[in-house]
Length: 240
Ligand code: URA
Image 1: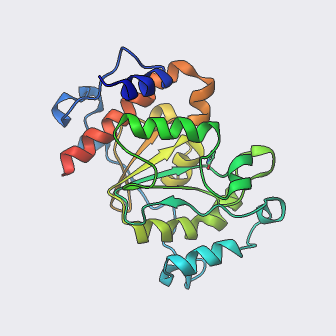
Image 2: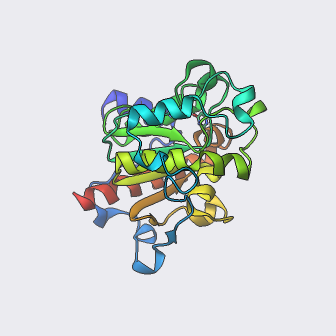
């Protein structure tokens, strides 16, 4: 194992227990997907259901519409909208909850402590922010005091995320944490129940894992997150 990889795995609290395995065949059999496990969702409405124009927008139009959005009260208290970052043709789409203080200040998702861990999680499976990876959030404005976005706030923002997904056409969506998972899957289920499966989001495979901010507080869960990452990587390899 090279030094950088060791550092990353140490950061994730995983050395020396977990190793990235090469093929689907080597994935923990409890994580293999069966048809029965694939779940369907139509949680996020098709872009444009609330505003038909959103469904026709290109990236520039969408970004400027988000930047001037006042559909919910979050825009009154945030510094700026945080649209998303990365490769607009990415195979991998990571979706978090909403910007925190640092993201609100810098205008980019996952740039604080949780973001550093996310970058390390990406590196652990040979991914890099901006390279075949796009990162965004359920809501584009920071909820005050980092509270969870309300159902209505998430609903107002949903057409923007739906259009981003439609434009990116990712091969896999990774929902980071409960808020992302529950909104995307229209579910009240726990992360514990939602992870370990390949869900279906309008024809796009979706997996659920823990939010990096939660992992910073709950070290033992890092091993489970690592399993999720391995499952995601093995799934993508099985598709190529
Ligand atoms: N947490 C999130 O869910 N998103 C961010 O962009 C930063 C922290």
